[in-house]
Length: 111
Image (cartoon, rainbow, N blue to C red; front, side, top):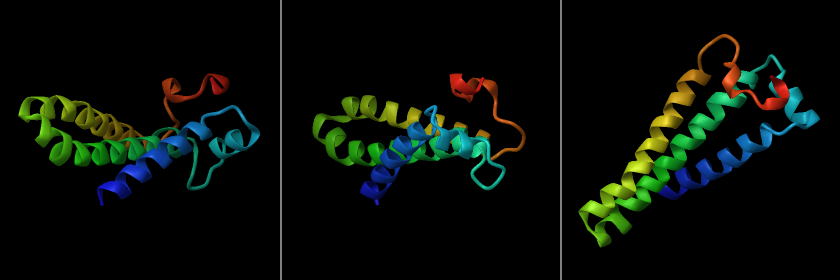
């Protein structure tokens, strides 16, 4: 399960970065009015991907590296994973809302 979350998170972040590029296909997807609209592509997809990436990394850090290196270093390695999950959750909550996407999340070519 940890590897599935890690793989899904990495692939989702890569896909999110590809959809932020200034290409005709990415612009047409961002400007569509279907399920994958601008808010979903720019906020929800990267948010869910970052959450899964953080969860996968946390699952790797806690029992493996954290247990072998001690409790203090394990906590220090877990803090960025939890922060990544929190930021991803925040973006996902913003992405599943309604209305136009905030201006700060749009690529520079769309502003």
